[in-house]
Structure formats: C-alpha cells, structure tokens
Image 1: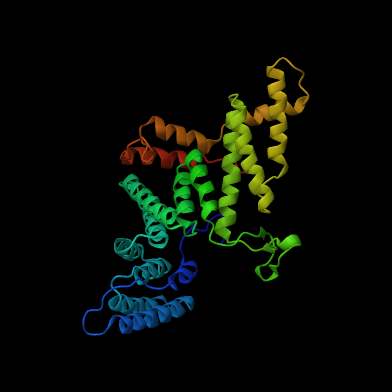
Image 2: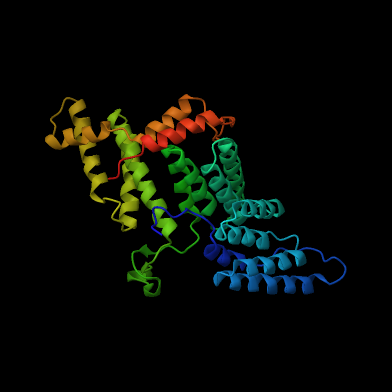
Amino acid sequence: MDRATRPWPRCAVAAALLLCLAPLRGGAGDGQEDFYARNERAVEHLQLGNALSMQGMHREAIEEWERAAAYRPDSNVPWNNMANSFTALKEPEEALRTARKAYDIHVDHMSATTLANNLRAKAQGSKLGAGELYEEAESVLLAGMAVVRRSGERNEHPFWTLAMLYWDQGDYLEFLAVAKEGFDYLSREWCAPGGDAEDDAPGAAGAPGPCAVPDFELDIAEKIYAASTEVAYHAAGHGRFQDARLHLEWAQHVAQSYPSAKMDVAAPEFHAWCIECAEAEARGGRNMCGGALDNCRRKWQDTNGRYLRMMAVRVMGCEWRVRKGRNSQKVTAQCFWVVNICRDSCAPVER
C-alpha cells in the first residue's frame, strides 16, 4: 500500500506488538491462585497471542488475549491487542468496543492512540455524529498526551495522532503545534534518516549514523513541511514577515533532516530571501530580487484550498477543538457535510 493512502499513524498490529511486551501492571489475585502465578499465565497467553498475530492468525490471537485478560483483568494490554487484531480483520465495531475497554481499564499512550484511531476511522465513514466522534477522539488523545508529559516516557503516537485529526480538517495551525511537540517525545534514538537500520553506526565524534525511519515519521515530517510552507506563504502575503520566517525555518529543518522527494530543501531559503527583498522595498529601498520577488508574491497570494476549508469551518461556528480559554463546541452534522463537500472540491494542489 502506498504511504500516502496508508492509515496514519495507527498502533497497528506490528507496532502494537512491540508495546505489548511491556510488563503488565500489578494487582491482587482472586484467591484461587496467587498473583505471581496468575501473572505468569497471563504473560504466557499474551506472548502466544502476539506470536499468532504476527503470523496473521488474528482469531486465534484474540482467543489467547482473552485468556490473558481473564488472568489479569486489571491490564489494558490484552484488550488493546484485541482491538488491533479486530481492525486487521476489518471488524470496526468490535475493534472500537475492545479499544474502549482497554482505555477504560487504564489510560496511557497506547490505549489512547488505539481508541482515537478507531474513533477517527468511524468518524471518517460517518455524516451524522461525526463531530462528536472527532471530539471524543481529541479528548482521549489529550488524556494520553497528559500521561506522557507527566511520566516523562517517550512516545510520540498520541501527539501525532491528534495532529492528524487537525490535518484531516485542514487546520494547519493546530496541526503544527501538536506535531512539533511530538518530536520532543520521539520514542526512537535520534539518527540521521536515509540509511538502513543495520547500517546504524556512530559517525564522527560518536554521532549516530544513518538509519531507516518509520513511514509514519516520514509522513509527519512531510506534512509539517507542507503546512509550514503554506502558512509561511499565507503570512508573507499579508505582510507578517517574521511569522513567515519562523515557519520557513521549520520547513527547512525537516527538509534537511528527512530526505524526501516531497520536500524541496531550497524553497524555504528562496522565499526567506524574497521576504528580505519585500521588507527592503517596503522601507523604500531597492528590490534586490528582481522578478523573483514577483514570482514569490504570486505564490504567497495562491491561498491553499485546505486553508480555506479550515477558515470556512470556523466561520460557521463548527469549532470543536479544545484549547486553553475556549470551550469545546459540538459540531453539527450540517457542518461536516459542508466540510466533506469542500474536501472534494477544495483539495490542495499537489506540488
């Protein structure tokens, strides 16, 4: 499946399996077996389910995880795994049910991301009630992010999953704020992308060597580049040159950090140069960019369709996002019908 069409980011079966090997949380036994014996049996069934799932035997894996859950009803891990297998089996209602169960037992980055992905998937296939599903997904992810911040653990998934909710609706500003924070909690050790994992080796002065990065990480980097450049062009077109520079710096940073045909490393620097010329011209000085400045200005005035859709949603009073100092509002079905229509007719032009 092409990366552009792959659901993103999902604690998919392969990814979740790595998470699911973490120790189960402690709890009391039921009096028939002591806690340690029950925990050992739970881990046996959990690991067997993991192995079966990796072989694509999801029904059998779910049965093993149900046994693990029976031994350790206080753990969200078996239920989270079940949700991912039901997703692989294309049974969305069961996936959502078991994801809710995992989240209700214990809120962490894993259960929050899995539940939010299921809510997002259901919202994308809905018209009536889509707003409520998106709102719940946002609330779940905010809780997962709060756990990550408090614990100091490193996991970017709840941040980047929430960022994608904002991306879905075309809100570049909220997308950028949350997506950038996700890099503060990157779960892998940093290395220079572009090589193979087995080629990882310290470079000069002990610096990490090249490595392969997950598809969803490259995807978020490409989207940060796209959003940063669009917001920068929009700001420059309205004379907010300092804002434009800050966004161009982020675009250049990710383009230099992640090799991708979708990111032009030279474009941010070129537009930053145009901004210098525009500022000099505004002060009565000479335009040192010549015709290049005119080309930049045409780009700055080419307002992106995704950005327009975001503005229309806000004007209609369909704002559902939770922000400081602002109450969350319910989104009506009518609002999302308009958004869906605009999604078809106002899609950003591929560059």
